[in-house]
Image (tube, rainbow, N blue to C red; front, side):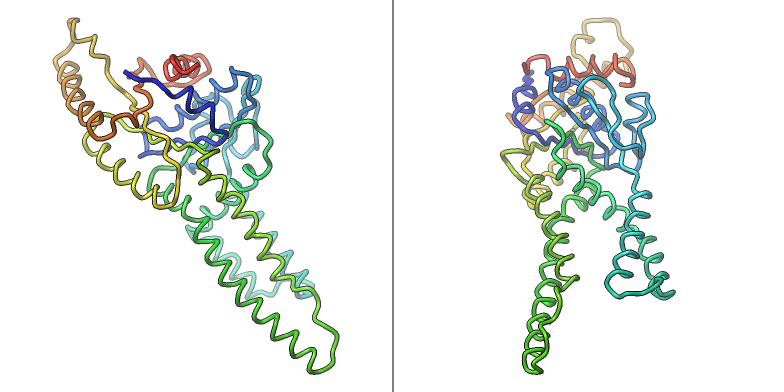
Length: 325
């Protein structure tokens, strides 16, 4: 079975693993980060999944602590959305006070800030902003994204376009208002209006989003891998998701098939259920080969236990990248 991951992964500084929940995205992210660190590259693996599990895999508490060193060259980070939401609130309050000269934030505005922070989209916004900070900083040779499950990932990946379009509209309106204000000032022979703080802020936000968006969709820098297992519904759902991701210009580098039960076991005295499972997987592996073909970059066997701790992460990395030096 082909294994081309190593030769592909090493070419892209930004690597994402996506797929339905529970298929092995986080373990693949951790193993990839481990393998690259072993090549002497400085690597950050980070999770944008609210149900973070990098702490479990590395057996180290990293949630909300920023980049935590796991071993030489390898750092891991789990984003704490609640902390970023509170930071958002503080930043909004500060800018309101600065822009309008209030001594304190009016009660009605404070109530709005609190209500907006309770919206489900606020968590995704906070996570997105944290990712922008990480990506724009450029402190590592490789960034490994452990994305949330497919539905949330599509929302997350679409946010750059949504924000960009929204800010474009608001900026255009603000520029038109600015022109009107300047014209009125000239007609009244008044001093030109001061620098537009709101327009400046919008331009700053737009620049951050565009910079991050370019990285996430840059075919020269970014590789996105779907994780799939030999099950009918997973295969169908993944193919549908791939079309949606392509619509957002995500550069799909291929698929990694996980939890393949070794066919060699058929030569042994194994329970009937295991024999049936292997035969069932044979059918779906044939379907994967037919539908995805050369896009499959690696097949990863079912392991004897969960991937937790560095020894198991190292074992998985050697399996995933055995032929990818």
